[in-house]
Structures are given as C-alpha cells and as structure tokens.
Length: 301
Image (cartoon, rainbow, N blue to C red; front, side, top):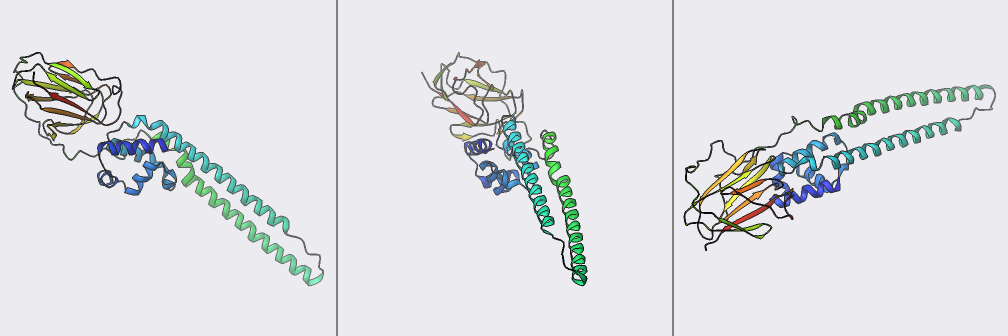
C-alpha cells in the first residue's frame, strides 16, 4: 500500500494540486487523503471495505489509471484481513486459557457442617456466573464476526468494480457549448518540418507566415488534456477529460516564436499529428503513464 500512496502523491504533485484542493474536489476529507498517500490502512480500520473505492475515486480525480494500482490495493487489503483474523484467533485462545485457569483454580472446600454447605453454595454461584459470562462472551464474538469481520472478508473483492458509489466529478472548466472551429476547407500550403529538440520539445519550420496549421490528438483511453498557447491556457479546445477514440483539434495561424504546449494526464499511445504528420515519441516517454507537458515551437527559416 506504500507504493500506491507514493504513486498518488507523485501524481497529485505532478498536476499541481494540494491535499486541501483535492479534498474540496473529491469530498474526501484531508486526513483520509493523507492516509491514502501514506499507505496507512490502520487509519481505515473501522471502514476498510471502502478503501478500494477511495483509491479508485482519488486516482480518477488525479487523471490516473486505477488499473495500474488495483493489484497492490487488493493485496494490501487481503494481507490486512489475514492479520486481523490471526489477532481474533489469538485473542479467543487467550480468553479460553484464562477461563480454564480460573476453573482449575477452584477447589472444593474440605470443611464440614455449615461451613461446608456455605462453601458449596458459594462455589455453585461462582460457577453459574462464570458460565453466564462465557455464554455472553461467545455470543458477542459471534455477532462481531458476522457483522464486521465476515463482510470485510467476502465483499471487497466482489465490489471493486462497482462504479455506482462514487463517480468522477466534472472538471470545473468544462462547458457544454461546442467550440467554434475555423474553416476546415483551408488547404495546407507548405510541407512543414518537425524537428525533435529533446524528448519533450519540438521545433516546427517550413511554414508560411499566417498559414493555417492543424494539430490533432487522437486518444486511446480516457485522458485529461489541457492546451497552452504562448503560456496561456485556452478554452478552445477546452480543458477536460477526453474519452477513448475522441479527437481533439487545434487550428491556428503559424507565426514565428509561437509556442504550443500540450499537457497530458497520461501520454502512453496517444497519437499527435501536425498537418497529418504523426509525431513519433522518444523512447524515454513513449510509455509515460503520468502527467507530462510536450512543447512545439514555431521557428522561422
């Protein structure tokens, strides 16, 4: 669970949110989020069955694929259940040993007459009280097992895929209106040249001034995306979580020193084209599963 918590914390810091901001966004309390990031399952000992839902919801809110965390979460909870069962067995064994010790310590009085009768009655009452105590204790342990322990053992694995309890909140920047598009019939005049500067930066040359350039992103899974032009976030296209097979378009007029930055919540397998020329990602980032920023700079000849 420590690895899961570290992954959540790194993703939150990558997308630039504080714990308090994520608490307001997810409606999960700040102490609960901190416990998830620290991998502290003891914090949730009273409601451990909800931990997978908390992790799933928190991961979705951070634009992180929960499937990459599922195995570690399931293993951590199974290990905790096993530890709790061992503790219950050890506690029951200790109670039984204490009870047996008390019974064995009782000795029948050897006195005669009234002292013997009084002693006998005293032993009988003590034994009756002890039997009542044992019965009540066993009933209590049985109730605790079926109300608390058994549901935690049997239910979490079956409910891990339940998406009806908590859903991903809408991004506050989302709008319902379809963004205006430029005239799609404007042809591409020049054969632009795309040169890699490093794994996250590219230079674009070979264009005419004010020539329209089309940048498209085809998503292979649900991915959060934000676009910046010259350092300013745009709302056309809008910042949101794009669905699998959805295509995002950026139409702009080329000019020297213009910088277009794409902020992906998850880069792996997403396809970016500039005027129909596909970008081949550097091997160091091709399978990137966290937030990453890719920049394209227009440079004159």
